[in-house]
Image 1 (cartoon, one colour):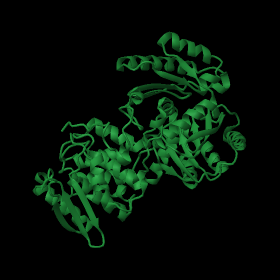
Image 2: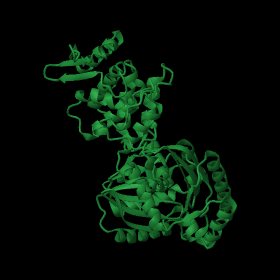
Image 3: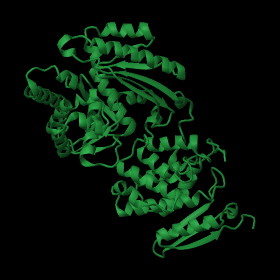
Image 4: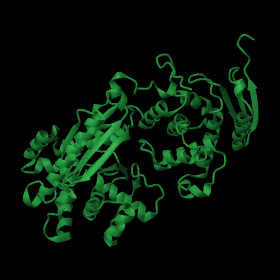
Amino acid sequence: MNQQPDIENVDWGPFGRPLFRDAAARGLDRVGVIDVGSNSVRLVVFDGAARSPAYFYNEKIMCALGAGLSETGHLNPEGRMRALRAIARFAALAEGMGITPLTAVATAAVREASDGNDFRDEVLRETGIKLWVIDGKEEARLSAQGVLLGWPGSYGLVCDIGGSSMELADLAEGRVGRRVTSALGPLKLRGIKGGKKAVKAYVRETMAKLHDDMGNTTGMRLFLVGGSWRAIARIDMERRGYPLTVLHEYRMTSRRIGNTADYIRKSDLQELRARCNISDSRMQLVPLAAIVLKELMRQFKPKDVAVSSYGIREGMLFEQMPRELRDRDPLIEACRFVEAKDARLPGFGRVLYDFVKPLFPRANWQRKRIIKAACLLHDVSWRAHPDYRAEVTFDNATRANLGGLKHYERVLLGFALMNRYTSKIDSTRYADLLAMLNESQIKEAEILGRAMRLGAMLWVNADEPPGDLKWSPKSKTLTLTLTERARPLFGEVAESRFGNLAGALEAEAIVKFKKPVNA
């Protein structure tokens, strides 16, 4: 079961050769990043050189380093002590994980505070961590690159809100263009005197200047980056009763954002915080962030809004990636990495894709990538208990940290993998999530799952196809032609699974065997 294909001699077809085994990518096996923001200090350790890497370790400490900065010009004394302790802890953790050196950046609070340089020197002296203090435009660039990690080739406007600043960056053809920075972070807005009316006037005036600086961006997609935006998105989910609480790729509209801003204004914030699992320190900033977001929507008029869980930290990882890896599909590369790590027969996912592909002759490139992803993931949950394997695969697909997936595509992928493991599904249990799919998509997932369920019975080896499927919609026939080596594998269970697949297609099942070459 541990056979590996010879990657130098395999025709990888539409998948392309895997890059995470190359020397240039192996240097990214474990990458540690510390982000010292105005509100929080976070350590992220990325695992693996796949195009959409997993989070091996992710810890955030709310330090409020920039609290009171507008009034005093200094870093918050208590926040400074907490941040120093957090960085010392993160340095010790990284040393224990064997991850050195760490890349560490500080943003608005440290760069604007009169004692920012002193804090940077203290961090180096006490922890050995060299803190790079970046300016607003560089912060905007790295945040936009984080978006590119999840959406290669993206176009639109990236808006990253931190505690003390808000940045905008233009994306076109997968490249970062114009960038601007502002003091629209909610910690900064707290310091404005004159109440909510004065805050709204300042936000309106500042946003108008940002709009002028960025030029015509009307009708572009808006990518929202930052903890305050994610908190608002989570509240929007709660208000709507949205069933899939995955923030990455969550979509909002201008009207929904307005409704949610009103919902926040009228709600008991502590009760809402508990329901949405938002920290108290974050929730205190949400009403101010909502004012900024409403004005952003009013002046920039984006065509749609996508929430990005990827930002400055992921942008720092993107910075270290070789160009060829950057250009790869994050979904496919992540699934290939998981297959290589967890599947019993790594490499068979590519063979399985070729086997099931004839069942979907009209699939466009977007649907093909979901089919590819399902085939790569079809065997990675084999360690789960058989009674729960179908549920585990569904949960993994719908809630895993995978880039390049719309929410309905997560459900489509999960439902296909569920059908790979069982033909008896209690659809009522998943009714809320399945409501995100139409009848055609549900049927497609069922067919894909049953095809993978059949293919999983016909392993020969990692790079040898067991035969081929021919689907004739006009004659309603499904023909399975097996190689001589695969013939012994077609037992009673495989025959039953082939019958179930034909049944899903409402087709006649026909089995043939290829004649030996020397016959």
